Image (tube, rainbow, N blue to C red; front, side, top):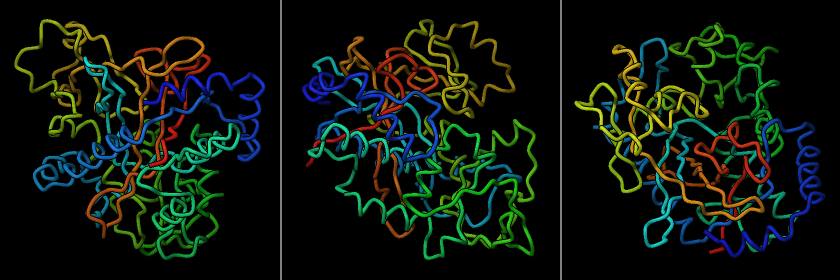
Length: 393
């Protein structure tokens, strides 16, 4: 971490500059962002950047090992199993808390991970506008030694493949009203991928078509199965249909790589994690544990101060879908005018089938002063949605 750069940055921010920064984002997008946009990026040293990269790569490579794949097969029920699964997740993200050792050394510690895409367009937009607004040309928002041209090329290839952009689409349910709509707009403007409501997609003779009758040859799925189920939405496309389409991010990885996989990971950055139904005796002292549902997103259902009564209240038939995880203690590591903030950094990766290991490309950061880092929990000044700016190597 770079407290020196963070301190210097604070002195340059004014209410006017922050409002101007947000106005620039909204003008570029043509809409207002609903979630809270933080006043500051998170400045990260080249050394810590490499720690984040190495940890994300090591963890994701474990996820595709045969023994782990055999275990995660149980997450795929027949009705949600999409045929012709890819050998690795084209898009996967790994969330790390910034923690501190007793000697003051910063360490990344895993919070959770997903075999599902994130805000690859919006996060570049946030970081690049921070750079231009505050003259931060001696930083980079990219992992892996990428620059802007290379990042856009990597993303276009991942999203579009070799197809005409007119025959590709980002699929989401009711995209005009999703909080992640800024990313959909950025994805279209930066990478040339349009957005289509998945409810309008039709299957004809084993092929996909959008609402205008245009055949879709490659799709970037952003629709979350849980949300569709919760809302009672029925699609013309069934997930187990063997349709003639390329998936830019095969949907099966959403289930394979999730909190479910954490008890099987062995890495210094991974906290001890157990399924609730496998615990012989609940620890007497639960102050060092977090209780989490497996299939929930954006922090829903996470209990950071569980009691024995909370654990006992989980029905026996549902205990396989909950984990008890060793608590990761966020470090107070980023200065703000309102005190020290905590930080969670998401490493966003791209993993083409012909590449040996995932490629970290972009970051997302959440920052706040509470126990949870999700944007919905951080709405005070100098908290919320952010991104990293790294030292140039």
